[in-house]
Length: 613
Image (tube, rainbow, N blue to C red; front, side, top):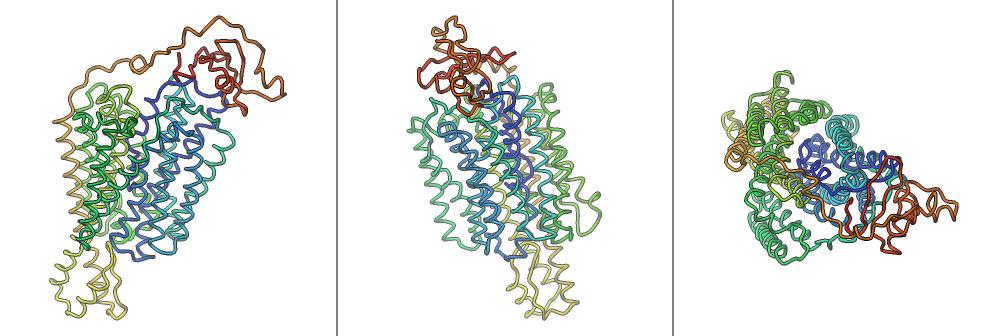
């Protein structure tokens, strides 16, 4: 993911999850710390790459397709496997996959930091995305499983604000490490928080019950979607220089997507419900997400090259240039919900898209030189304002487009669309920008009347964005002229991409006006989503059989949080305890409903129906 804005569906995934009894009071803070660290670390990796790419270009001199592959490999894995990894967490254990994801992200980030060539770096980035696909959805699942709905609002607020700090600070700290060390520091930066996440989760986070009714994981659907996304992205990246391979990859991707569609129709437990794939309203909402995130990522992918290679910012200063955007989105998006309630989602989305389009258009104004506050701050702040206005109503419209029972999968798919938009932006814009860049260089070189030998040397040494390896034989006066030509050529191509991005954001506003309709007042989500417990007849008037956990009293162990079986009166300790005797009792007896014995709690939980009764 090449931008510093979180996908819109992440927060709603937590809010719309089924109600749970939560975990013991003392464990909740550790769950919150672990999920903040886990999501924040993945978001840090997604944002820090922005300022590392120019330094990677200097180190390895990769071709433009290789540079795009470095930028997209992480997101391909995360976008394609995120939904399947969430289902795997329900089936095999949320905490187990969360731990695997944290450990994997630490190891793969270390591998990226030690990569000896561009191919190792691309492979490491793909494995990073796989680890993040295990980490991110199960981080959100742990949060929703550990906090009942009545307590999620505050937990989500802390989680959202903290992960925003990771996203905002990542490019700055990563840029500082790039300046004092190299691009390798930007990857090694991820290792300490990933290891800390692993330690906190391993020693302090209780194990949520594995769902009995969890459907089988759709691994075939995940593999087909991964092949389809990777095939399309690779075809776009390779299209300028290798038409045959691009065509073969395009055919491969098309066949994979077609096979995915047919397989999901026949699969009794599909990764994506076919009804959602064919829902016009849901498709329209995700098209808006695709357009808006494509527009922002397009500009943000090229901006660090402009700042570092052309404007001569340090990597740290280039990272700090994104701070106004991140701060505005993090602070103001909270207030967009109230505006949406008063004006309606359609008006707010149109306003947000238009504001984003204006900000992207403003990126086409700066030339070479000038103060940041008069050149790049106004467009950065304007785009931030537009996205702050847009993210909350996007989530609202996604949830309004589906049935309440499908809110979780709909939110996850919406986040996937946002990540796919980033992939397409890097792939398409990278190809387009390099073509514009080289064409503009040729035009300016012709106007400068350079000797043919120098033109040929320039053409042979040209490698990537805003950079050309000029031979030492070029005189100082000619070198200054060529560097000026390169800088002006890149600024011209960046302006064209900024205009394209603004046009895409404008298209999002027009599409919003045509596809989003005024929604009826929201129904009570709790009533709409609450399933009916079918085991209430087994509840009897029981008295606790002991003053504490029966098994712990016998063995001398300490317990945390007590549960009372409403079928027989057995008292057991909760899943925050090391022995989890309440769950053990259920597995042994199949008595379904327990009640909390914690002072101030009156909830009841059905192990079989997996709902709060």
